[in-house]
Image 1: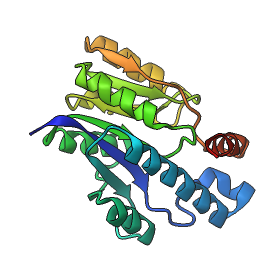
Image 2: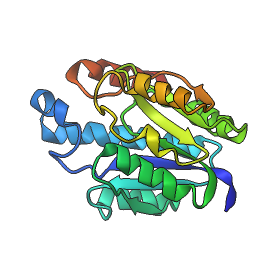
Image 3: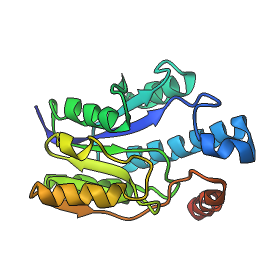
Length: 207
């Protein structure tokens, strides 16, 4: 086992009609797909700039999608298919498999325009300092990042995914298990038309 923390970029192949579906009525399938590609590219940029020496892609949908292959080939990231019947089990499986090979694993989604390398570095440092669980809260009541030193399945089963109580319920379960936790910076997921201003604001700040 590597005595290091691996970063898992948890994403979906950017196929029109299958990503950012809650934006489609407002902007159309193609623009929704382009927005997702932009968010994924932003996440990869933060990952590459971070202190993680190991980064992996865990993909739902077509793992051979040209956009995914181009990222994998450019940066040498291995690509794995997501496995599991729901979001919780897909995340748990990705983390559990990574923790067979590394002493810690951080899983990050691709919905936050504001994600930075500092956020990722803080998550990595928290695990290196032996906290059991690290979370990146999102303003909708969920989280955009989760990291852990052991695969705690109870944090992913029978969870009301997509609701505004996911973070609250996760923290309650962490407390019940007597685990230590670290929270990093809160960000906004780009899920609805009203979130698109956040996307343009963050892009302007990076230019």
